[in-house]
Length: 202
Length: 78
Ligand SMILES: [Zn+2]
Image 1 (cartoon, each protein chain N blue to C red):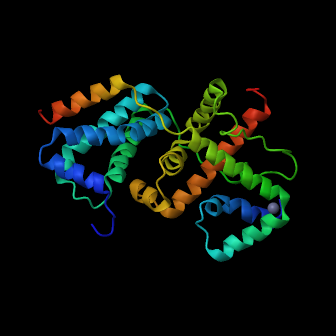
Image 2 (image 1 turned 90 degrees about the vertical axis):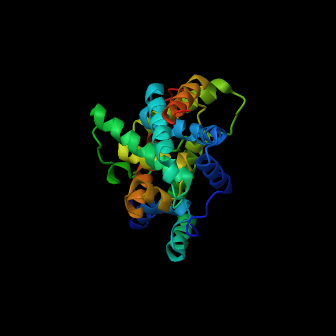
Image 3 (image 1 turned 120 degrees about the vertical axis):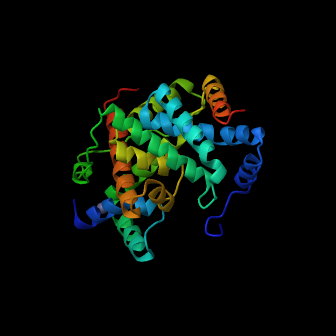
């Protein structure tokens, strides 16, 4: 346990759960339902799928939490289960080929692009309509990433796991995490820029 | 694209995440001082990431919460 600095709150909740506390179950659910729901929704794009992911994650987690030895953080363990649930769901649907994003396709050509128009999230937070539109553009851009890039992007930039944690969680190399994240971000930049350049929103 | 620009382009994410070793990081700093185009590109990528992070968290609807909670309690026979 000294390698992983355990979160004190989680440790308390796990201990209480093992001692049979229902309150601990509620607290664990409340603590992690929104991040896992966010992850499910950004991976799958549908409310029903996101619900399935959250449900599968918690049911599996509580089934095995009794034996959880806290060798990883609870949060990482839950997301490992959630990521597997997403991949299983994808395999069942069989409709999404996992294509590669090549770096060459994203290279910016000298001077051809002119000014990069990326809106600023903090420009006018009071404008709810603009904010909602912007959110839709971004959510769609994320959903259009090939699954393996989307998975890494969501864990790294949306859920805030670091490179090492993401690599551990997905059982891939740190270099793969970096490569996929970089290409995902470049591709999102491209999609957002082209959306605003075409003036779909103004 | 010039060679230095390509090198920069390949490493922007690591650069923004502070994951590069000092030497490479300084090289990119140096290149960005001289190259307006890469500077602008790096800025736009930084902005993209911030934008995505800004839209991040979703709120799980309460009916989903209730359904999942009862399934968990059912599973644990409570
Ligand atoms: Zn350059």
